[in-house]
Amino acid sequence: NIIDQLAGRDRIPAFMRMRQAAIDAGDGAAAAAPTMEQMARLYFERGGKLFRPRIAMLMASACNQEVLARGSRLSASSSAPHADPAFDAYDDISGQQAAIALIAEMIHVASLVHDDVIDEAATRRGAPSVNGYWGNKMAVLAGDFILARATQALCQIGDPRVISTMAKIIEDLVVGEFLQMSPELSPAGGEDQRSEIRDQRSTSSSSSSLDDRLSLYLQKSERKTASLFENACRSVAMLASASDGGLHGTAAAYGRHVGLAFQLVDDAIDYEAEEEDDSAAAGKPIAVDLEQGLITGPLLLAVSSEAELVRLLRASPAQIRETVRRSGACERTRELATTRARRAAEIATSLRCRNGASEALAGLALKQLERRV
Ligand code: FPP
Ligand code: MG
Ligand code: MG
Image 1 (cartoon, rainbow, N blue to C red):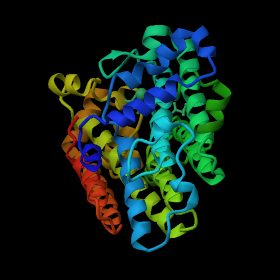
Image 2: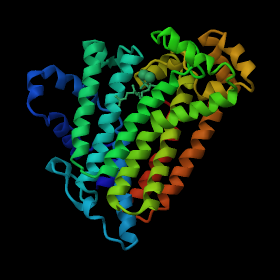
Image 3: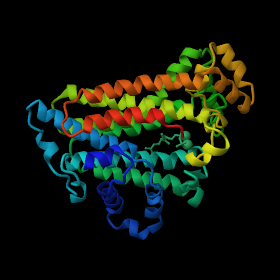
Image 4: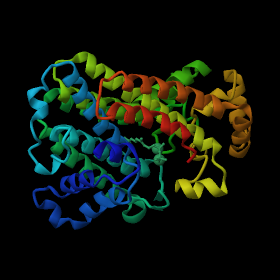
């Protein structure tokens, strides 16, 4: 059954077919640029957990069930199929809702393609990155191309509120990435930031405190990671019932809590992973954040004052990592994640749902707390 498929780590063949169709759908111009499609496909074909589309589709199903339980009819637009039959893959969610799951995944992948340019990462998941194969210029275009195809799929949904909600994700990803480069979270500064911009930004932060940094870290995480979950969940809820603002808020809150928990766990893992064993399993090197000069949750929770943080930042990455690990800050970061994941699970189980989708959502929220790589 599809809920089991979505809840676990199984392949989701109908979703994969949809995804293929979206990349292939073009006006023929891409035929003139076969490498463009090849580049755009690279990360999709490399697999991955498909965590975002799984959550979006399960939330769609749970919201549809809740709307039925309330006795209100599904909104006219939600039951409408998507213009492309490839999207009408599942019984209990509409073609438009399935399209949201796909678009969320496409936006995510586009952002990874650009992220690897910004981070100068030659590999992703242990294999060459798009920029690793084809260089930065091509990678910028490949990310834009995926985003263009995602926009086409989004416009076919035809609901301006949903289009605006999904567009907010793109804005938030950009703003989140920008916040991450602020001097409070990235003291060394992006090396290629023009010096006058760097000066402007650092002057404004000369009085930064540990609390400011923590609050900025959480804001950055909400934009860069949680927004995608939050707004994809909000969008499928809007398609379940156009007028039920309470349901939109419930679905969005679930997504926000899951997204933040996901980022917190990721940031704890960056400090926890052991050099040899885990880095191979994760397909990425460890303590990357620190090496990149980024300040994340565990580092902020390892110190009790701004002065202590400033002192610690003068140490070598290896020493900083040791201090953070010994301080118990990774455990504290995981506690914050646990609070968020439990909140998400409670929200999910409040949805009246007979097909297991809300339990699956609660399970996925709690399951990521077990992640060690
Ligand atoms: C991965 O972070 C990156 C993101 C979650 C978002 C990056 C966003 C942009 C580059 C803005 C442009 C957005 C679009 C939609 C084109 P990471 O570097 O911490 O993680 P990693 O280990 O996966 O590289
Ligand atoms: Mg990166
Ligand atoms: Mg990055």
